[in-house]
Length: 209
Image (cartoon, rainbow, N blue to C red):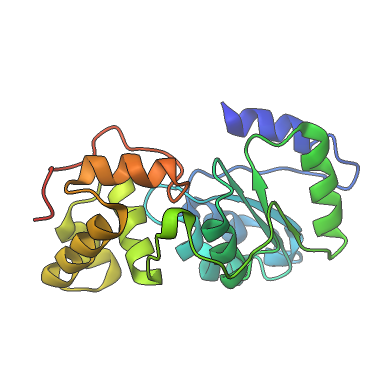
């Protein structure tokens, strides 16, 4: 639903021509392979990227998108504009960060600015602490994002190239930071703090094991 509405807004911008859609990082990169040989990945000028995607989240997919579309500006579009997420978007090399609740005019203005080479972020990427003093490490944020996607420890370990015991340690540390003792409570707390965009339909087992 949101993607359809966003497309209707974006196509109103005078500098936007053809629009393609993809539901995952893999699908987006496949578009580059189907692009005309004369244009290649550089034929794409702008990528609007959600954070929570199946298979690989938007943050982790940035290197693949940069390789597939080397000339494109990449802007994250998220339900949350928590400072921590915006800081990470900057650190990953994004050109902008927009809230899904932004008005059509705000989105169009942001697109114009980014296409003109001006970074456009929803909130300042300050170096201050996370809300309520939460201070997750980058790896803990990676684990939390996968938890929010309903992934069990075994899958998280495989995707992050960690041992299951290391993942359990990160989960325990996340619980301590958030002041909770199970995954469901952790995800509710993380959503309240703006650390994750949405809760999965199934939050997984209640323990860290």
